[in-house]
Image (cartoon, rainbow, N blue to C red; front, side, top):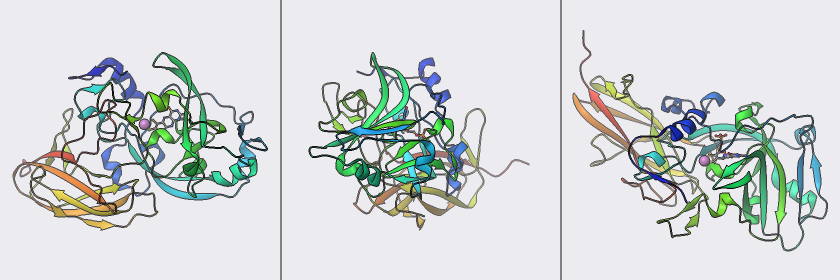
Length: 358
Ligand SMILES: Nc1nc2c(c(=O)[nH]1)N[C@H]1C(S)=C(S)[C@@H](COP(=O)(O)O)O[C@H]1N2
Ligand SMILES: [Mo]
């Protein structure tokens, strides 16, 4: 089980944080996140891939196993969809104690346009046989986690895997996938947390038994204590974030803003349903007012919001909170859990408002 930490970030956590960067929150401005600003999470190393030699195998409980190269996939029907990706560990470093893992604050998010071919027709071509229950997706990357030598792999229940929106993506924002985002092929399952979106995909197996690999049984479960097996994580809980207004300090990034009407902008999303509401607070969540929403550009993309804040001199704590069509919303305090997952507590942005000097 995970080693728990309190207090300052250790070198081991820093080693992860320096490789796996978040999306700077000012990038919430862009409706589509530029590839270089999208967050990144890689458990092991970026694998070396020769695209000429690379093949995708589709096998397991199927009538006709398939082998496809980069060009075979590119020749298939293509769709492009904007999809919000968020790491299930986003917010982990805000809980205490936290497990030793990637110490995210709030930036493990991005909303890129993914292009690729729908998965279901490929599974149909392979001909899934009776008794199929799950589909397993395996990446080319390998490492040792929980003392187990493993490839990164995750399964999906069959009903989810054959969903209309599940894609095998080879492009991000109209360009071939960057090495760090899974070149040459990754899975995109809109609405699900990041761990589902297997990168460097090279094998898809149809299974007759539920998969019990490390990334299902030991990780990505919502567990209240070390003894609680917990429920598996799946869809993204609602979250809203704002571009912190004003200017930051350096090296301490406290915000400094000037008095007067201040347009605060941000984004909101949920993997459970469409966003219905975003609220804004300038007093740490004691009182709330509705923000104005701008519609999402797709069913699985984030939507925009704005609020004009009358900034008065003094110290303030700005917060935002969203509610989706299922009624799911963001708590004021996160729900503690062993893995530090799915912490969608409201964002808090301290701001000092003062007349500019000179
Ligand atoms: N093969 C492979 N796929 C992977 C991972 C990984 O380590 N290896 N990390 C997962 C996790 S935990 C997340 S949050 C997303 C991150 O996707 P991104 O780096 O493209 O933003 O990729 C997922 N897919
Ligand atoms: Mo993640």
